[in-house]
Length: 229
Image 1 (cartoon, rainbow, N blue to C red):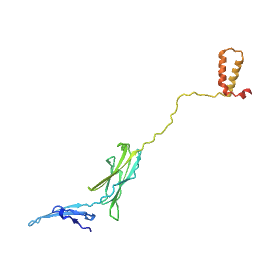
Image 2: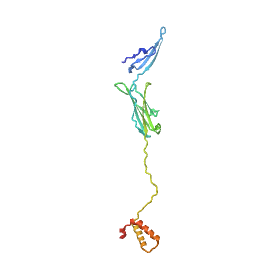
Image 3: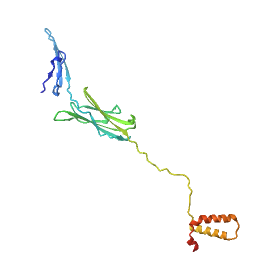
Image 4: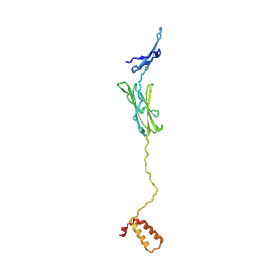
């Protein structure tokens, strides 16, 4: 049992100043006032005193990724360790408090060695396009509080993962010259006709010119062996 120590120099009939308060000093305190004779009337008021051990570390946000796509499910866990009582955990996304529909609070974990408590909470929600309106980032904050004496936050952020642009080969619809290699029968036929025209006495200049052109055009493809045979 811890001894209740008070500082007399700072205490008087209306206030009590305690020193080195421990967990066992928490409880209901009462102040009684009585009148002298002949009425001896009394009056009493009471109030509860809570003794708090605050966490030594900030709450931790775990499980978040650095990037999310629209439609992904974001899941994260917040842990506030070693306090008395356990801290209350609240979630916010882009400074907006989340509804309890997206939050799960776990049972408080108690350390048997020091009687301190750890609180755990998880959040789960589908990422929307509007979540990235604040400078292109999604901000998730966990707030831990104990009565009116402790309030700390931890914040993680993630950026939007945009789908990669697919590369599609552009089709070329331009017109191109179509070249067809003449076959052996065509080559042999035109070559024979033109040779015959050249060696005859035909004086027609146009005929001679066309025959010369055909020989130049078809000659590379002429199968001379087939022609001779």
